[in-house]
Length: 292
Ligand SMILES: C[S@@+](CC[C@H](N)C(=O)[O-])C[C@H]1O[C@@H](n2cnc3c(N)ncnc32)[C@H](O)[C@@H]1O
Image (cartoon, rainbow, N blue to C red; front, top):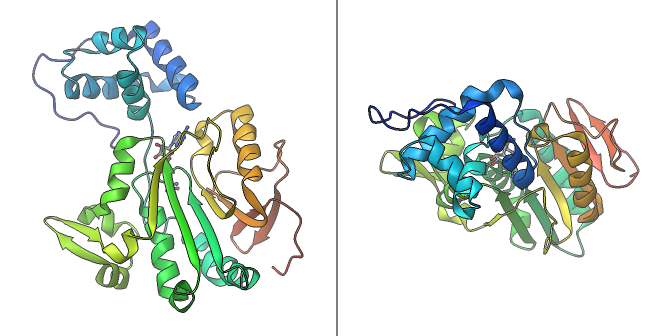
């Protein structure tokens, strides 16, 4: 999501946020999504509230704040959504995908050779580039196995707008230019108007669901690989520990957790075991015989 405001009608939505309004938004976003909005981001909150006021025909941001105060759940959820940062790209941090291709997936296909079932979860998937990158990689390098394995691949996020984008699998040329190799574009996408759409054979492999990481992971089956990249950075330490504790419970003991480059479980009260592999750190729920 762009950090800038969309063009707005002259004279509309121009009221100021003020310190009280900013605090109100900080508190509601923290309560609902555990996201911490830093003190120096008031301008950003104000811009996003203005855009929201316009979209919801609420004239100005005071009305948004009033609806929040009244407990209007629809508006509260849209305010939370408007405060999320959805930055992502195809094959973001490529060395993670190299680790998947060369180590994690070969290891898991071997470990699950009799069970023939693999579960993947992209938590905080944003607009879906991460999930589709993994699915393309699976299809490109492990296609022979996919026929005989049952693969459950879930993408989740707190933002309905992002989930809608994941479902559509449509990307602009600018988004495609950010990390998607030309061979993948040719093989896995088709033109849809001005955009590129992921082909149905790949989209079909993905289940999309709304999940708030600040809440329990009800109904989540045991996972082999969890991608939880570039989202823990928005939470405080206590929240990170609580989330990682819940994630560990739904992971298979020999599964893999992948975090963003600026994230780690080290120094936190979680039982994950970090395992370094070249430029990537893999987190395991339990100590494993290490071959890396
Ligand atoms: C920066 S994006 C990361 C996207 C992708 N994982 C990546 O690394 O490229 C962060 C995503 O986390 C989502 N998010 C923030 N707070 C969340 C929460 N409490 N529960 C679930 N998703 C959340 C946002 O909506 C956003 O799409």
